[in-house]
Length: 264
Ligand SMILES: NC(=O)c1ccc[n+]([C@@H]2O[C@H](COP(=O)([O-])OP(=O)(O)OC[C@H]3O[C@@H](n4cnc5c(N)ncnc54)[C@H](OP(=O)(O)O)[C@@H]3O)[C@@H](O)[C@H]2O)c1
Image (tube, rainbow, N blue to C red):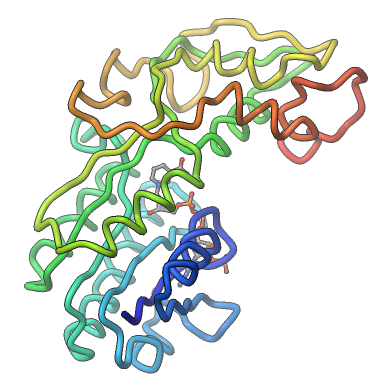
């Protein structure tokens, strides 16, 4: 089948397109670098022509509440209209685990608005709510570092490898529209401060300090970001993922060079 993936150099588009092609599908993608802009609608009609399934893995460039809402409102509007014109038979979007439990957070309001717009579009659809990506945990840890300390709250999360998210999305693409939500996460529930320790293990000179007021995940009640026991889990463990990425997570590192400088 022909599958169109909207999204650029982010974490999901490239592995998803690779998986779909490996499975024999005609997978193509569009993003601003290829002249396709979901925010303005430019290039969407050409890209979606002949598509059976469309997957939106794009994201707002900045995630303050207003920008996020403006992005999803305009991009989802353009995408659903173009999908209807093209006769697409399945629209798939990515959302976030716990998004329905955090109505006060602007980014969650935006994701819920996106889900609503897709549901109301009349198109057959699937929403995949996924836990935080491992790559995002790594980024959060790096951004939390000041003066040799990463201050992180003990908020419980259930992160997932972006590569597992891409596999789960491919399975959704290959099946009938859910007309609802699938929730996916990694195999383990972790405290965010503990994930910070795993991330920075082996990087001498950096310590994690538990700070229940630090960062955007502070104060989020237990179990909001972990999903209920029925959440579908994928296999890759954060610690194993870090070990396979020694230059980024640092676990196998023996020195303190600055290879984490992109996130620290
Ligand atoms: N990050 C997480 O932990 C997480 C967790 C749960 C759910 N999600 C969801 O997963 C999805 C992808 O998130 P992400 O973190 O992978 O995002 P990301 O890495 O920021 O990638 C977003 C992509 O969107 C593309 N994009 C931006 N503006 C666009 C436009 N106008 N038209 C078309 N494409 C555009 C960007 O293209 P360029 O590369 O050209 O800039 C970028 O590659 C989002 O729906 C997000 O809500 C993320």
